[in-house]
Image (tube, rainbow, N blue to C red):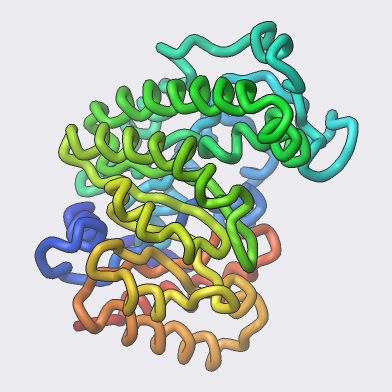
Amino acid sequence: MKTLRRKQPDFGQFLKVVTRTGTPAYLPFYEHLASSGFIAARTETAFNKMSVQDEAYWQIYVDFWLDMGYDCIPMEIPFDCPMPSHEEAMSEGSEGRVVINSMKEFDAYPWPSVATPIDFKHFETVTRLLPDGVKIVGGVCGGPYEWVSQMIGTVGLSYALADEPELVEAMFARIGEMHHSAVRQLATMDGIGALRQGDDLGFKTATFLAPKYLRQWVFPIYRNLAQEAHANGKPFILHSCGNLNSVYEDIIDCGVDAKHSFEDTILPVAEFKKQYGDRLTPMGGLDVDVICRSNEDDLRAYARKNIEACFATDGYWALGTGNSLTDYMPVDNYITILEEGLAATR
């Protein structure tokens, strides 16, 4: 396995990029997440068959990122909300894991304690494994829209907006309270250098919920999370897929410092930087499909083109994919991208 580990990681360089303050000494890397299959392939281990409770799990996880030249460890833990697994789901798609269909079921659901909505011990475990100069970029697995739309279903949410709006209000209030509690506690941990939230709000042409509903229920939660991060001197990063052109100004107004997830067919990261880069740092953005399908020469040229457009101008960009590291992504192709990043200068 070819290692790209930096001799002296420096999370401070990552912070300069996210907060757009100071000139970074080099181009930092960032990903929202990596699939267990990709990690297994890269580390040549059985990581994809391991549990978070396995003794070696988190050591492999940390070494995976460090050996690719990262200064940060992206990490998220889900709420302790009982839901059917994908294997147990009665159907496929958006309604497969529905657990709440009415206010009666909302009241009867075994919600976790707001004080301890996630298992914080995993963040403590990873903190103990970090070398000097490395920090966690941490948060809750699944955003407010994602949790609500899974728990009552996309179809169920659509009907509830018209037939039972009090259920929608209650769902976002409870989920938002849990997010706020989790981030408030995570923001105080020394091992966490930045907060992040993943919440896929859209698809190729629009947002799933109309912008007016996002402004009513989702963005106030983002604002609270960003405020908790900032109150502890840490930035807040949002990962969200889809066409968010109608709500980028709202996201900026929430106090979000950086945005991750881009797709060339929606809005290439270089174009996003031109429009919003002075107020919202773009993170990653190299199209997953291009990375998967390109030969080495074309891939290096593609990486250099984006580095020139996004980093060489002012230094406020982190190299990475537009979405995540997937099972089907060739490991060597991604390493090629990172090699171009290591060679980048301003």
